Structures are given as C-alpha cells and as structure tokens.
Length: 470
Image (cartoon, one colour):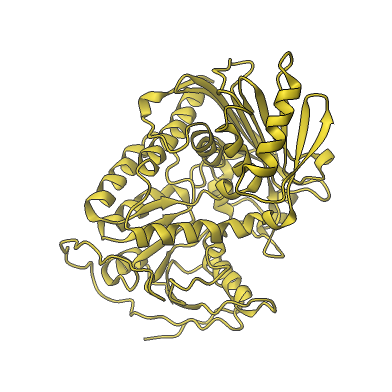
C-alpha cells in the first residue's frame, strides 16, 4: 500500500486504499442494497473520475447522513488534482470548514476497482461526458446508487444505453438521479407556483414558432470564478466529442425546467415531444483565451479538428424549438468567453398564459440579479387581476415577505427577500439533500424517471435534427 501526495493539498488527508494489482474481478450476482434509514453517516460516497468542478460542489457542505470518508477512483492527472484541491479548500476555509477525508485510488483499472470493491453505496459522477453514460450503466449494474451531473448522455446513438441504465437501476433497487440545480432558484420556483394558479396565469398558451408558449435562454462563460478562485477548465471540456455540444449540455437544464414548470408532477412520454427546428453554431476562441481558462500554451492535438485559422471553434451554442404536449417551447444555450463586469451566467425565461405572462430577466437593468415580472394581458380586467395578484403574492405562497412593485399599468415586479436568494453553488447542496431524502424514502417521485428519459430524448433528438438539417 502506498500513499498518494498531491502538492495542492494542505489539510485533506489522502491515501491510496487499495493496491494496483489484480485482474478483472469475477462477475457476481448483484444483490439489492440494504434500505437507507436516514442514520448518521450511512451514505458513503464514491467519486468516479471527477473531471468537472460540479463533483466538488456536491461536497461544499457536510451532511449528517453522509460519511466524511469519501472514496475517489480516478486516473492520475490534473483533473484529479484540481478536484482534491477544491475539497481541500472547503476543508481549510475559515467559515464553516468541512471535514472530508478523501481516499484516492489512481490505478489504470480505477473503474473496475471501484465496481469490485464498492466501499461506498452512492457514486457521484461529474466529468467527461463521452464516457459518463457507460460509467452510469456499469455503476447501477453493480447495485450502486448514482448521483450524476448533467448531461447523462450527449448523443442519440448513446441514448438507448441511458434508457437501459434506468431499467437496470429499477431492477436492482437503486436510485439514478441527475443534478438539476436550476429547480432551486427562487425566481424559477415562484414562476412555477404562479403558473399553477388559474386566477393569475390562466392556462398555458399553445404558442407558435414565432411566439412560443415557453422560451428559455441560458448564457454561460468559459472564464469564471468558482468557490472564490478562477476556474481552470480541462482541455477536453472544449472538445464537443467529450463534453458534448451546447445543444445537449446546458439545454438539459432548460428542457428540465420546461417539463417541471409546465407539467408539474405529470408523467411524460417520448411521444409527447416533436422537434420542429434546431441549429448549432460555434464560439470562437483565440489561443490566448484558451490559455486563459486552461493554462495551456497551445491547443492539444485532439482539438486540431476544430482549429481554423489559428482559432478554436467550439460548438457550444445551440437552440431548438419543439412541441411538448401540444405547447411550443424554445430553448437556447449560448457560451461567450468572459462576462461583462459585474455579471455572470444568466437565465431568461418567459411563460405565456391566457391571463398573464411570467418573465424572468437577469440583464443589466436588473443588475444581473434574476427578477420575476408578471405581465397581464392587454384587454383584461386589470383591477380584478391586480387584486388577485396582490392577494396571491403576499398571502398565498409558501415564501413569506414577498412584495409587488408596479412597473407600469399591466406589469409588476416581485420583490423577493434576500433570505430566499442563494448562489448557484449553494444549489448543489439543496439537490444533494433532496437526493438523500429520496434514498431514505427508497424511491424517486413516480414522474422523475420517465421525465428524465424524455428530457434526454429531447436534447439528443434536437442535436440529431440540427446535424441532419444544416
């Protein structure tokens, strides 16, 4: 047994917990895992090949139900070093430090070793998306619960593998779940709650291609800060064959929200979805910009296929319009290099109802703070509408202390107390806590699995459509 030391670590105690030798383990019959009870430390995390910073954000907080001992299986390299460095940063921070003990195995057979040893009962997977779907299926085959970062799958060709993984998870009695942080944004939650009130929203419009019933736009930036430090992205993140194109990556959140908000607690089917149109386009990065986010002096060979005139073309942008249960939705994902001063990733959302529209804006006018507006339709009884809206917002919602600010004769802004506003990074803890409750319950809500399948069917079908209809 040998110790592994990482130069970036100060407090995190990291050791190798298994030798590198040995062949492939004999195939064993999968036994259904023991039920969770909510007991302290009963959830034991295994982190598999953490190539994306979202893997660390799951551990930004401690959880009573989760053991502080975490088993990491990964190849040697900068991805692993960066992950351990982030965990070490959480352990050593001045305010509410964590106390994770990372035990790391770095043999080339890291996947097989995890599946044979299984020192934990929940696998966290956030990294290279080309191999993620295979990681997921093999983990649930081994009788392990999986909490996976999005996207779970990036091509239509791999989509049947994900469907199979959900089938296997059900047969083996384990929970496969993806990390949908955007459901926890307070403006999104309020948009959903208001859309379910007929006296305010009415009914969801059917929409048109030119004026969809639902429209969502997400703008992201390659250069950003995470947990107070400039993010160093791995070079493979810029290879759409490994990360996935924007049309199947960020749009996962957007499609999820369309389903979650417009059809709350309803079971959806693939036949409910029809792709109408889709397109994709690149973000062009100079060599200096690439260096600024990867610390690499030049483009690696595997990116040469995307280099034109000395610049990297990353197909990180995409949009598509589709029909879902009779209503037309449009989602767009856009990646730029660096945000304007004071800004960060932004989310725009519009829902059109028979009585009003619910619009989330996050532009310069809102000081890049997500803000929810209610816009009554012209020609209606504004006096009655305003009275109903005031009553609902100030008395009829779970969130207390909400106020309305009149913008013009038919538009109101919801003023939300600061206590309800948490950062994107904090949403990872909220998702994890929700997943821990599902483990204790022994099941997901009945609509979650079918709707995850529909979500990834939608995104992968849209990419296929965009490539076939250039």
